[in-house]
Image (cartoon, rainbow, N blue to C red; front, side, top):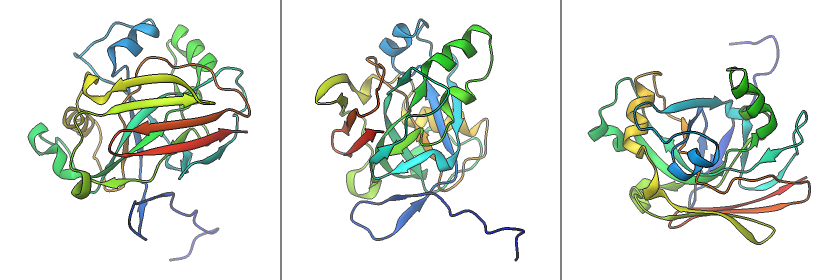
Length: 228
């Protein structure tokens, strides 16, 4: 097959302990999945209806490193999250079968142009420009579920220049991983290579050029990044 120009390279992530890489298909994100973060953003915690949005697959920054401070914002925020990587998918996945589709886990940053998001919220507009920009999704190496199983608890933290800003346990998520997969599969056909950002705890705050960020998920791994 020939194309009118060279097809772009498939974005991919490192798999810990393997020379093979994980090709990324789509990036799904859930908002307001920790009660305290929902409150700090002026929302009421709600298990009735999950809030989803997406990022392009080439928004990932693999394996840490430099992240460019994005244009069109003066209020870039960090949001640390557990990331779920799918090896298979489908439609209407039952909750009790959802974990069968998980390849592994990582830790990532849902970087957010908070000023653009606030404007969008005030006008009931989509969040795309505040969430789905270039390099908005740094992700660590993935750890295979076959190795670490499926973490239901674990300390999730983020530090900036050595100062702890975010800390929670993934057990505090309002929607569990099986529930998130189930709800997503009611809206989209999930595919191998999909990533799911599972929400951030409270403590989100602004990043500045030159900041060094360290994200960690107990039992899974860590991610280092520098804002340039």
